[in-house]
Length: 589
Picture 1 (cartoon, one colour):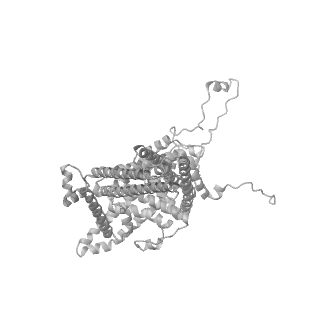
Picture 2: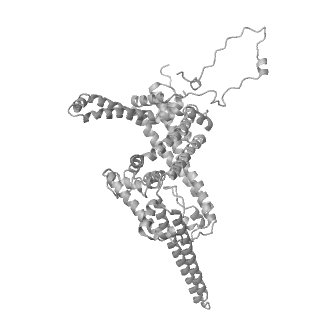
């Protein structure tokens, strides 16, 4: 019997190599319910940030390139000096525009004085009047250029057309006049754009918009680095804090700046704003992120069972306090211990006796530092497991913190390995989704404009003015509004951009959905490694989460037909069907 051959008919790769379960994350992440929730989260955060920008005071908004100034500054004093110089320059430029206003009102006549104009510029007054005046001046200059062109065409047409050479000369003169007209109109629009930017600059840029645009640029830099194979470019100059780098930014540098530059700028220079926005982010993340994690948890345990958007949100609402407090409790613990140590440090101000007491009890401060370090490392390593814990177990924030910390400290290298595989796989799938969206935009752009021959005001093809050629390296785009003076074209450009940006935002929605899906899978894997719990064990609420597999009660006629008669043998006691792990009742507290 021992010598009988064994035939290998198949390998369960997920059992043999558990990390391959991570490769299920893409299929789970693109499920419509998760993408819808992620898209809603993005839209709420974006419009919430823009609304907060609208209410923020002008003097506390960002100057052009403020985060870039912070990025390249050697210290805080240099950054503050450069920021102040930039604000003074924009104020002075706007004061010059105010003095050019030609309006009959008495208040605008006073603006001819330098001190009055500068005082108004510092307060950001009359921006609407200046914008209107600039548009009127631009339109008048364009009409004058067109009138000169028409007069030149009439003069050319009045010439002799007898011979072939004369007719050819007339055609060449018309083309030259047309080129001159286009050159003049382009110069007028460029000057209008420069002066219009002066007005917009003095109003300041919203802090959320500045943060959002900087982060988007870094994502584009990461994509360009991947496409060009530039993984470490610019690393040495950035580490040395040199102002300019000859090398283009590589993937590593752009990634490090994405996670460090803008968040630290927000924390140190605009803390109140980003404290308010952080509260909004935490609420949105708890509701929509918790719902995505819940749907992913059920999906991973049993692919045949899928929750709806309503069921996911219902679970997130019921566990809202747990979701919102899970990431906050460790930080509160660290701050609380730190404040106690800081208060104790006041004893150093006591002459002679204070240093002795602090020296004798310094081991307590070291113990506090040790505890804070454990909490911070556990939070950094287990943060991604907190929401999946609540979603899978149906537990509270304390269980989420306890499990995430214990899994990280029990199997740190396994956790690091799973995270590395998830990061690499996520990068590949992100590029694939980005390519998919790019091809969608490109094919749409090509076929919509295939038969468009109408031109915009600057001579450019109207469709290309409405929607520029899509770029894979930078999906967002800016419309050439200077070429769209027609109200219909401007409105059409806005609507086209709206739908395009909605499509582009699906890339961010996928990133959010993938984040929660892959971390839910990692939680299942870590739980199986540490607690020996199978991956199909998930807490289900009843009766809120009813599925199509729920058996239907037999009809009355069927029950009557199958009922035993009086002469039949005594009924055998039925053994209850075994309960699956995911049908278990909620744990008692």
